Length: 148
Image 1 (cartoon, rainbow, N blue to C red):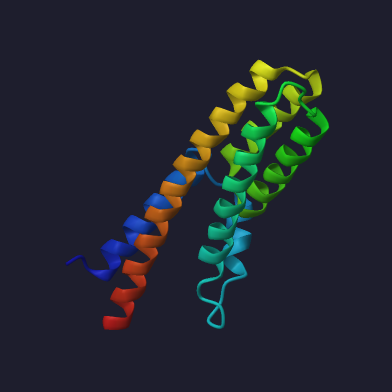
Image 2: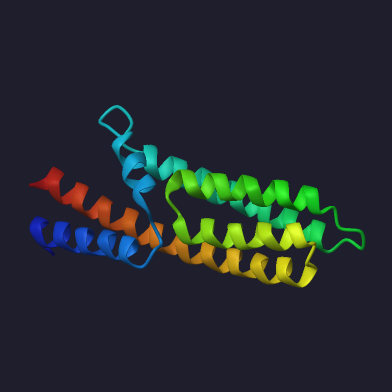
């Protein structure tokens, strides 16, 4: 069993690495500041909603891009929505791929759109596992504090 200080240090190092590797930006810190005693699950809830929404939007994008006659305005609207929601949780790498995706939409470049769709799926999957690890570590620190 790890001691509280060791768990807190590991959590701090992991969180710091997420910022250093460009997964998260300052918006995530702002999101965390909205969490308090009255709503201890706030960040987990917001992030969970983001991933549920992202999955829906990514499926919609895949379906739209599979059509013979692609409505690029519709594709762009979906990517814009995903860019905004990823920005609101501080998911910087997802947001950056969305920007590239929107450029391909503007050019009506189907290949580029399909390529960046795969990149967004990968970044979302990676981000989801990083968040799962982060939340698990936070729970361990919280449980250790309660016991101590």
